[in-house]
Length: 357
Image 1 (tube, rainbow, N blue to C red):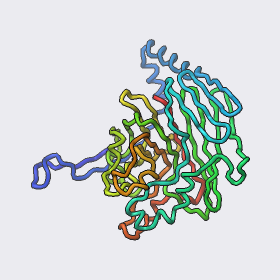
Image 2 (image 1 turned 45 degrees about the vertical axis):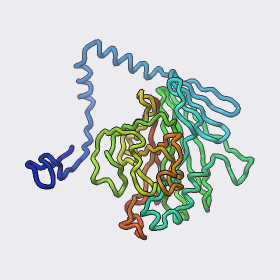
Image 3 (image 1 turned 90 degrees about the vertical axis):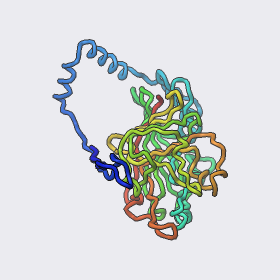
Image 4 (image 1 turned 120 degrees about the horizontal axis):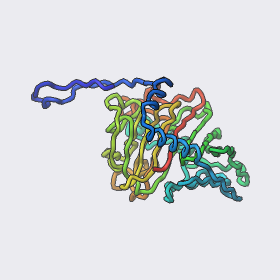
């Protein structure tokens, strides 16, 4: 529900109809079984038959599992997924015969430092999380010959593959990345981390995807239309928005973190024909942070000016439990307020899903 106040008459500073204030509240409405049953009874026999056919199709979607010495393949009627058994992770996701991934999705704990971050020496204080994002590995770097195999659980209608990633921090930390593939082509993802007290909180907690540069159209149901962060979102409205990936690059003098979307329910990243990936929040876990940019956080961080950014070769998608706020009340030493930092007092668990469209 949105309540909005507008000027009734024209003034010297704004035209009539200009919005001067708004507020939003989300109400969760649940229907009873009785109301659902009445809705079904009210439909025509043709619609009922169509519903039964659709439900039967969804239930009958079967999975074919193919194992080799190095990979595990999961195939459905319109998609194929390949996992590396040598510890790399999810190496391929094809939907409708098209490869959707340019690289293995990886845990991500880093963002490109903002002007406020640099003023408070955030890059130095959180430097271990940059290393963790760059060099997380499913192989044990402490024992080069040791490559623990992922855990595999196979059921009639789903396959779950779990990878354990070691993080090159001091002390060494680890996280788990779960993939659950179902017959409709959806991949449910869970990132789990047991906090290490010596490491403290991190700038971001999520998963980073690299897609083809063709997927440069974004649509999302969340806060917008401009970028939002944990401590920079009270001026945004919940709604459905669309733009191009390049539009999410804010025109700051120095390239830095930008373009994030808070409280996202779902987001689509597609090409001009509407083909691509749909990312969805987990209903039980709640909304996520979402970002789609033409550069990785590390590429943004390395450029001191816009012209130093490399040519666009990929689209970088980040789905995350959250990101630390961008304040500081100034850019010369003030740190992000504690209430806008990620809470690492207990296990961090981020759940979402993606599928081809």
